[in-house]
Length: 398
Ligand SMILES: Cc1ncc(COP(=O)(O)O)c(C=O)c1O
Figure 1: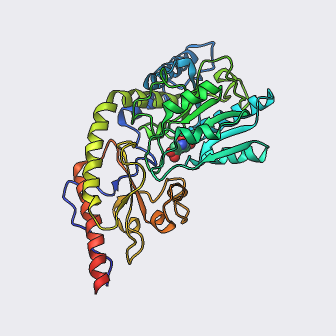
Figure 2: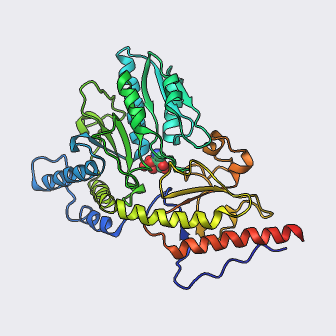
Figure 3: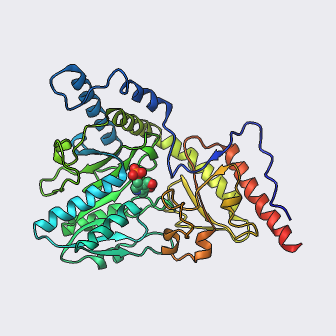
C-alpha cells in the first residue's frame, strides 16, 4: 500500500501551514519597519554620550525598555538587555548562585525536570562546580505542587528557577504561590517567562519574582535579543557573566544592539495591545483543533487541560504503519518536541518526565498556534490528521 494522498487544500490556504509558533514567530511588519530606521539612518551607539547620534540611540533604547517593562508591570530600570533568553537564564541563575555562594549563603538550588535546556544545562554546569540541585518531578499534568516545592527547601537554598509556561506542553506553573513561598524564606526566585510573555497577563507588581527571562523572537520580535528583569532590591546581587565596558549597570557588557532592542520594545508593546483579543481568537482556534482530534481513537492530550495557554496543544497519536503522525503531516509545520530538541530522535524528555511511555512520547505532536493562524488552516490540519489515521486503519485491516 502507498502512503495516504494529501487532502485537497482549499484555494485560499498558503503552504506550508505554520503551526510552530512555540519555536519562533515571524517579525511583525510593524516591528520590522521600526527596526529598519535603526540599521541605516539612526545607527548611533547608545554609549556615545557626546553627540546627537548617540543621544538618539540612547533615547530609543530607553523607550524600548519602557515598552518591555510595560507589558509585565516592571520599572524600566529593572530591565537588562541580553542576547536572548538563553543568556538571561544563564545570567540569572549563575549570576545569583556565584554571588550568593561568595557571601557564604549556601549552595542549594531548586528547579523542575521539565525546564528548558537553557535552565537545565545551566544547573548542570553549577552542579559540576559544587552546587547541589534538586530537580522536581511534575505530576502527569505537567505541574509541580506547593507541597512538593516546600518539601525540597533547605536552610541553604539560594535560588529556585521555575518556568511560567512550558515550551512543549504549554502548562502554566503556579508562579504566584511559589513566589510567596520563596519570599517568606528569603530565596531568590527566577522565572523563565519566554512562553508566557504576550500570551497571558504578567504583573510583576503583584508577583514575588526577583528575576524573569524574556525573548523577543517568541513575541513577533527579532531573534538574538532578550531581556532579564532584575527586581530593584539592594539585597539582590548578580555576578556579571560577560565583562567589558560595564554596560547595563555592569550586569551585561557589550554595545547595545539598538535595532534589535527597538524591535523587542515594539513587539512587546504590540503584544500588550493585542493580548486579550488575540488570546480569545487563538483559544477558539485551539478548541476547534482539539474538538476535531479528541474523538479519534488513541489520541491523548499531554499536560493539564485547564492550566495551559491557549496557544499550545500537545497531542500523542497512535503510531501508524508509516511512522509517526508528525512525519506524515506534509505541508504542515509542527514540532515533535521543542525546537531545540527536535534534531534528536529521542522521545521528548518533558513527556517522559510527566510519565508518558517512550512510545507515547515519540508519537507526540506540538501544535503551536499564533497571530497568523486561521480557521481554514485548523480545518485542513484536522482533515489531514483524520485522513492519515483513516488510511492507516484501512491498511491495517487489508
Ligand atoms: C521556555 C524557553 N526558555 C528559553 C528559550 C531560549 O530562548 P532564546 O532562543 O531567546 O535563547 C526558549 C526558546 O526556545 C524557550 O522556549
